[in-house]
Each structure stands twice: as C-alpha cells, then as structure tokens.
Length: 423
Image (cartoon, rainbow, N blue to C red; front, side):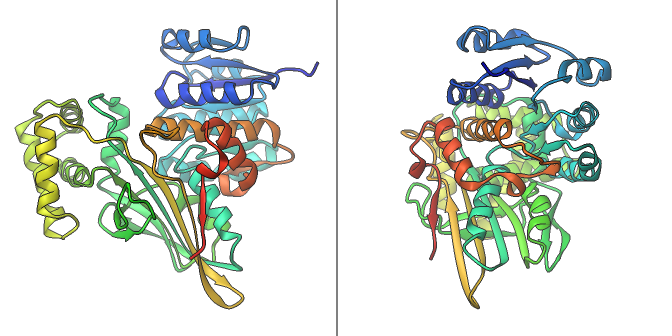
C-alpha cells in the first residue's frame, strides 16, 4: 500500500474552498491522501469533515502569520493549498515557508498586485527546487489553460483576450473582504500587455463586445477591461504578443454601472469603503441601501446609458425587477479568444465554457472556481516531476489532462466543460 499524500489546506472554510475540497475528495476517491484543513473558524469545517470518508480529513486552526505555527503545520506535506485571503497579505509568508520547507504550494489568487509580488519569488523558488502554483481557479486558472490550448492552433500569438462573467446569486450577502476586493477592481489601475511591454490603464474604462456564441447571454455581450492576473503572467509565455488583456462583467449588465459608480466614489473619497460594502450587500439582499450611496450608483448607471453601453429600457427593466425583489437566474462564463498567424495567414482560435446556470454543474461563481481548484489539485499531486519556480497554469498544466480532471470535479462530460471554436 502506497503512503498517503498529505495535503494541507489553509483557509478551508470559505465557500469556494469547501467546494474545492469536496470535489477533490470525490474525484480522487481511489487515491491515497489525507487532508488537514485549517481555518480561523474551524467549527465551520465540522460538516465538511464529517461528509468526507472516515479518517481522510481533520480540522484545526492556527495563525498563518505565526511563522513557527505555519512551518509546523506544513512540514512534510505533499502539497499546501492557500485559500485564505487577502492574498496581498497572506501569500508571501506561506510561499516563503513552503520554499524553506521544500513543500509544493498552490493557490487560487485572482489579485493582480499579489500576483506581481509572487512572480518576484520565482528565482528563489527555482533555486530551492520548489513549485509554487499560482492562480489555480477559474479566472485565473481555467482561462490560462484555455489560452495555452488555443495558442497551439497557431505558429505565433498576436493577441489574447480573456473574458469572465459572473452573475446574480440571489439575496445572499458577500463577505466584506470579497466585496472590498471587488469594489477596488471597478476603479483604479490595471495592467495590460501592449507591444512587448506592460502598460497601465484605468480599470472598467476600455470595453469591448464579444459574440460568445451563447443565446443565454446574447450574441453581443459587453466586457470591461479589469485588473486580473492573466495579464501579468501570460506575457512571460507569449512576450511577442501585441496585446494581452483581461475583460470582465457582472450580470445583469446594469450591475456594472452601479459597481463602477460606487467604486469611483470610494476612489475619490466621497464615501468610505465600509459605506460602499454596506450598500452593495443591502441591495443584494433586497434592502433599500443608503440614499447617500445611491447617488453615486445611479451616476454609474447613467454613465453606461450616456456611453450607449446599455439602453434606457434595459435599466428600467433592471430597476423594476429590483423593486419587485426578483432576481434573475445565475449566468456566468469564461471565454478566451487568441489571434495569431499560422502559415502566414491570420487565424483566430476560441475556447469557452458553456454559460453556467440552472441545469449545469456550475450554478455559482464558487462552483466554477472551486471545481477548477480541485482539478488543479488533482494534477499537482500527480504531475510535480521536476517543476520548480513560480508557475501559472499556462506554464505547467497540460490542457487535455486538465480538461479531463475538470470534467470529474465539475461533474460534467468533457464536451460540456470547454468548447473549441476556430472561425
């Protein structure tokens, strides 16, 4: 009997992390592993531990900023997974501990700034012979693999457009850290790769319309440039590209205007972040929200109308549904479009996830991201080899193997996981 692989999961109580753990355990049921789950609120893990096979999981707690406790918890592990944010604070101490202890590391970080900091640890990790797998979720994560897959259809890559969309999940409040991260993403700088070097744009200003080939979201869906790790990591793989950018959207489209208006008000110090978070959670949960903040939210909506990004009718429909406390079905997707040259001719290759929602395996952002993380965990415990350094998914994950793993963790046939289009 082979020795069990010991996986240490730090920050295991969040929705995405719990789903990732559940899907990993289900897909790897025949493998030899044991999970050590840690969170500042270990009592939230009791149900998850009980649902897993007997003897396969334990729950505990420690402060990851306590260097001695952290190193004691990860010593001798086969893999450390970090699900605790914000990554701008949590990733560096855990990465440093993993390098020191010679333990592979994996996270689902979707923050641009912390990803740039992680990339600076590449040489240190290479010298230590330790792989640090970053951005292993849906976007980043699945999107990086889709880009690497599509890039194989051409000789040279000229442009990569990465798009994500996530939707309404009903009257359920989000954690304050999650909303803090989201609000900051709607106003402020973002990195884009242009003509062989990194440049800085303002997030959610530049936008583009893509035909994502799904009637569910419409044939022409508008996405907004945003700060995301793919534009930080992909240029290392495709430095010759003229443009690499990430565009995102919330569904329904009017929510983008509300978030933009609130985020700009925070950036301009007209409201506090706490006021913004309280307002967003209030309207998500069908409450009125602060009149003070509504002024800025409506300004964001009017900006969308004025720029002809959405129509007045669409705004009125959104407002009417909100007044009736009617939430739309969740809709979300990931879409990657790669443009380049093959045999001297321009070609376009697309990879996309069919629009998620009712009737699919992915009915929330947590479901898609958690399934992606679980798939990367499956690959990481079996595909380490001689890998070392800070590695994003396009650097190490074989597309076919990843899609097969995602079919298992996503509980869907492979052809319903990722579709390939070559116009």
